[in-house]
Image 1 (tube, helix red, strand yellow):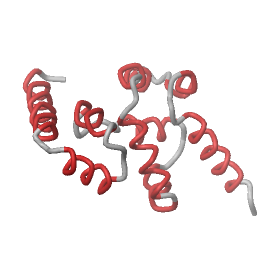
Image 2 (cartoon, rainbow, N blue to C red):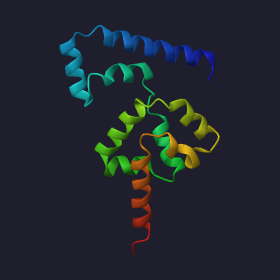
Image 3 (cartoon, rainbow, N blue to C red):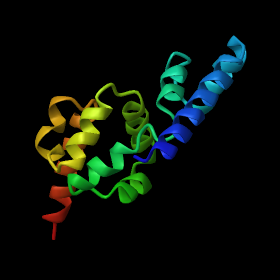
Image 4 (cartoon, rainbow, N blue to C red):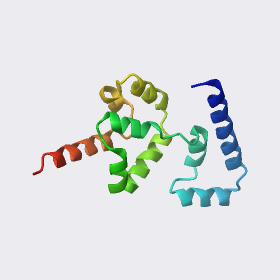
Length: 131
């Protein structure tokens, strides 16, 4: 990542975190309800920034899953998986595995969405074998 982009991303994350901290408890609770997360999850999402779940579609594609198709068919599931990905503590490892094309062989040891991704792969495989 170029230094300018890194600084811009840091600045955006810093602004979001401080905007969140400026909310009173009722406002924070209302925001959490509006986006469908717990109030405890808001600081985690703000700290990771707007690209927090960018690894998920990349991982899905590495697993031969179509994230757009799954989003159309299972919107709520995809939203939940994105939130889980946003709060994941293994994002750096995931990103590195994706960059080195080793994510399909390793993701199940650290990805909190692993079980769901396996089910989606099994579902896709069973649909492809139907006449």
